[in-house]
Length: 84
Image (cartoon, rainbow, N blue to C red; front, side, top):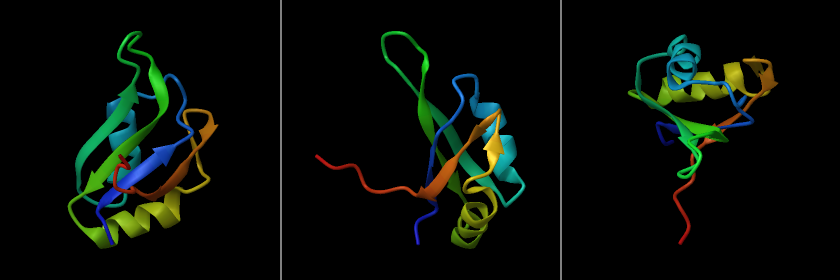
């Protein structure tokens, strides 16, 4: 299993620090990023969280999928490779 997770359904106000803090409850997070629009800088409503350990990533999926973060119910799943 990959250590990188896709997080969808983020609130427009969710910042990277808040995203990281929510996921750090499940293990060591090496990277947390909220994807933003290049032109406006506004959140696109999704992000990615990378864990040091795959077991921690799985625990985060089980613990946070369909839970509320910043007033929105989030979707958490294993990140897929980018399609070209």
